[in-house]
Each structure stands twice: as structure tokens, then as C-alpha cells.
Length: 404
Picture (cartoon, rainbow, N blue to C red):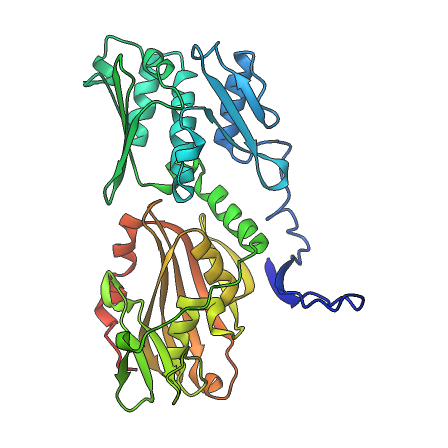
């Protein structure tokens, strides 16, 4: 299946002559495989897990078939269940109301949603052995009044019932896991869970990959703010006529976030994108996207779970903006310049949710030098952070820092 994402300019209305900004329109060309991307089974739920929770709620007399707030005394005294819908009207979130929405940081929203959904899921399971099996499978820890769940003399529902939206809580994280804890005044509840996107989002691999494409095609980026870059942070690249701003690196020094700039005689600093400087221009393209002011299309093979492949054609700017909208941090590397081609890797790192998008790209250098900026790529999405080192073993043996 080939999917084409087009970027077109809004028509300027003759009667008001108001200039419109660029917008994204998704054009999905599908024939025999029309149901691969958007066709939904007969369900109102975004994921299988949400459907299972919805069915369990039905057995307790709570209908979660449409958005709203529902009393959940039958599950936990004094609690309510919040049901939310997302794209296409499908139910996208179900969970207990535990946190004051005013203190939920936007970039951690999926993590807060997970805690509310997971504790609800546990309370819907009647058998302690089944709860313990789920906790072990998901590597989730529960400690009640300092006692592990399986040894606690007090039921989990008593601790959850004592949590109110205004109850003090602590949320901390390290590189691999989150910990949330409440002190209700009558007891303490601590919950730990790994930074694993599938667990936090409640999706299997296929659902993650399907949603990636849907959300990418519908993403509407904001106009990037103008960046003021002081000359003091720039270093001239010898013999090249442009400057480098050093960034951070990821895994290896060659995979980094260095940006490149031109400096005009009047000291005005601008991002570099020049057909005569392919490697530096590619770095800026994949790190900055919309800021460079140059649209570049890329033919991408989205390599998916189960040896499935989707062929996408999309603007690099759209992909970069979408990944940054997911709170990913981009890193760019050149692996090789040989046989007239530039090849390397772009990795979008989401440390909050424990995943990476990994893109292997290929650029025809001779075409680039002539102003043809089209690219090819091979994309892996939602790669667990702990698996990335394995993917980069061969890359690490080849990659080197290039003085471009």
C-alpha cells in the first residue's frame, strides 16, 4: 500500500485577500488494501484493552460507550470513571478520577492516564491471583502501607478509595521507570512501572503503528517561533563558509544535534540549507524541519510488526514536526558518503515514554548538488529504548564524526 501525504497552500479568498498559512491535507490512495489504515472493526474503542475494560465496566452496571463522567461506587466507594473520546469518535481513554487536572503536566498526560486506567483495571479483576499475574507480566509494583501487594492484609480498593483529586502525591522518574505515591492520611500507596510505551499507552504493536500513521497524516503543526541565535555559540567550520552550533549526542558522538548556520555581513544568523552543502543541510532538515523554509519529500518504507511494509510519501518537515509534537528529541548522523550517496540515521528519542523512532535515510548526493532534494528512508516506529543499542551495533562500528 502506498500512502501519499500532500502539503498544499490554502486558497486565498478573493473577497478578503487574507493570506492563509500552510496546512496539511491527507490524501490516502488505497485500492485493494483500503481497510489497512482507516477502516475500523465494529467497535467504539480505540484499543483492544479499552474494549476489555469497557466490557468489564458493563458487568458492573457502568456503560462506557460514550464520553462522560460515571459514578463508580460499584467498583470503588466514592470514585468516578472518566471516559474520553478521540479521533473518529472512538473511546480513547477510560480511567478513575485520581488526579486534579490542574496539576497534570501536558507532556506527562499519557503517564497520568495510564495510572488512572491501570488502577481501574486492577479493581475490575476479582481474583487476587489474576491481579498478581498481571502485575508480574507488566513489571508493575504496588506497595500498600510499605507492604508489597501480595502480602498486604488490606485490600487495594481501600487505598484507592481514600485518594481524592486533591490528595497530595509524589511523581518521580529515573531513566527506566516511574514511581507515583500517595499519602492519604490513613495510609500510603506506591506504584512503580517501567517507561515502556506499549504499557503506558495500553496498545499492542500493531495498534501503535496504525495510530502513528493516522496521527501523522492529521497533524497540524504550529508555525515555528523565530529563533535568535547569538554569534557566541557558533564556531566556524574550516573551509566551508558556514558555522556549527554544537548540540548533544545520543549513543555515539556521530549521532548528534549539531546545527549549521550562515552569518551575513550584518551579523544576521540564518539556518543553512544549501545544495552545495548536502550533509550540513540534511542535518538541519531533520533537526529543524519547518524552520529551514525548504520543503523536501521523502519516500519511506514503514517497516512494521509481522514483516509488514507500508510505503509512504511525505514531507520531511511534516514528520519532524510531528515527532517534536510527540515530545521527541531528534538526533542526526551520517554513516557513509560513498558511491555518490549519503546514508545515515535519524533517531527521534522520547525519554518520557521510553521509545524511539528510527529512520535510516539515503540521499543521492549528485542530485542534491543539482537542487533535487528527494530522499529515501526506512522507518521503524516505537522502538523500545533498551532495544536501540542492539539496532546500532553495526552502525557504531562504521560511524565516525565527519567534519562537514
